[in-house]
Length: 270
Length: 301
Image: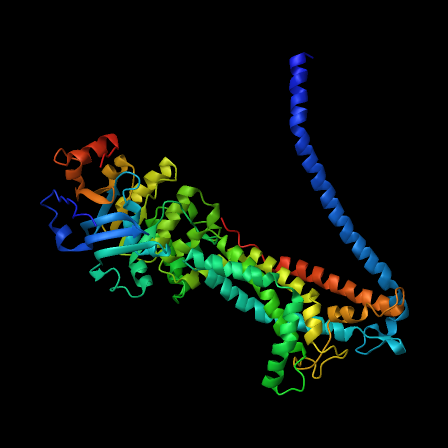
């Protein structure tokens, strides 16, 4: 295992980041079989706001994200080591029933995947098994679709198949579906990568609107997008954190040379 | 037309020749298959005609006695349906649950091993199942239910269930595994247990494949002869009471297997046996059509 990475918290104004982190990793590593994808990282992610994980392909961004709600366990080869606290509880022992963790830590994937059901059924899908009055269900559907900036487009066809929506709308529906669970943390794995620019911008606005209420951790390759929507940035390369801190500092001249090179040339030589 | 243009045309004609050959072969195969089915049905209709005209009085009774000219086919039709229902009601739920469990296996090596074992089981000749049924299962059933003989409808149903299980399980697992894994992952990301996503999304999406697997199983259950013939007890009578699985019985196939060699070609006896096979074919077609209408595709993306 490699030595601890250089983690640089640039801003002194990041006291809440250290005081009340939503996620705290210490010496955290993730593996697929024998391959170490994330190597011994230490990182605190603050509560509320948008934290963007950036870095070249293969840096371990998605692996890190998938480790945070233990969805990586779907792969028999995946394993993790080190200390990881999510919302104050240990990632493994603090959540003996992994579904408890996943209800608190929602996730939206790169490719929209709506279920072959109606739009409203999709929104309520995560609440299956919970008995609620119809009026409350309607209220949840409306609230979540409004939060996902989709209500105006689908309010008159809630019983239509979700497969009839465009990809951008499907992705917002996936976000609405995740929001219906009232998660405290929302993980977004390149949510705008496979959709058109207009829909991507709608999702960016949505992420910014949601950020005061919840912790959003988003993987992105889009530097301009990171600049537009993030509050904090974590720059990963080759499974290690190169630099992490507030957006204003990462995008300033005070950041490391490697970071500046990546931000300007989207190239990393680590 | 210029020489170059002629060359181009002749070259494209040469390129198209293999494709035309394949198309012709496909058409001949399709027509050939349809013709064979029509010929079989036509033969069955023609050969069963004498039975309808000469034995129509006794056909739909529960008594079978060729010596007296009594050819009641009801016990055989009932026996076929009864054995099929027992086999399907055992094999379908077990097979479906096992298919779901196998599709959830994270260890790919173990999954492949299980699938290979199932395919080997599906390929075992039916006579072997029949021998196991005679040597072990019927004795066990007789002991369990305190019967003089274990060669009864229940034993036939049990053996048939074991026989159709590997085919149904393997094909159902294929259908479930072909549903995009993203559904499972998205369901898990919403905090749902795997069985919740499977029940709500995966199974409806895999329903057409599962129903095809069930139809194949059903076809085998209705058409299986040898194993059933060995363990059913071959009694040309309706069970008493009617739905008593501990009674001996007879199915259409076991009847045909036993008596087709003894009946003279062109006789009423032979014609009644052909009529029973026509009923068997009709039953299979009717159930196939019914199942296709009942099971609507789950429209996976």
